[in-house]
Length: 260
Image (cartoon, rainbow, N blue to C red; front, side):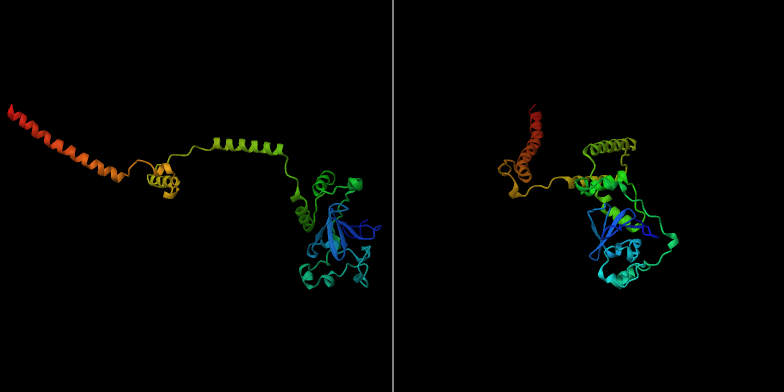
């Protein structure tokens, strides 16, 4: 039943502090607030700073199982939460007990579809609850505080997409990327000569680092190739003999001419 003058429902036949506001259930038990989008949970703990103000404003008389410290408080006024939770809470929730009663929002519709789910049919998985709610209820919270909790609890825990849809999405992404590549203009060649040394430096960096001596294989160590310095030394005598032959050749020709 609706609390008169408030956008909040309460359960008069239940011996518990059980409310419904802005598409979600709210229970006050053992000095703590709990919330759920289904009438039988699962419930999660709500910080005193995150309880919606209209839930806090419900008069004392609508608490079917009030705690002992509610005694002596006015039944037609909300509980004295400032006395219970302290000055810090009062400072952060300042003005929670003052509002324009003419601007009270209308109560959210009750999720009557949940009556069909009880006993073994009751969904215990959050993903299943969220799916049924999206199909049968489709109400979205309007209160910013409730909306934030709802999104954090349910919309972030939606089941991952099916593999078929994932593969189709990948194929579409590949087509889109190909179309983008076809539409892109061809890159122009670099005409700046200064870019060539930089390109050579990049090629040097990409070259593999030579292995250390102790890392080389036995075949590399037994190689018969001689260093470049030794090869130059062996080639030097041969070059000298060639120079001598070239110097001796004109002398022999001159002697032949004289004899002739």
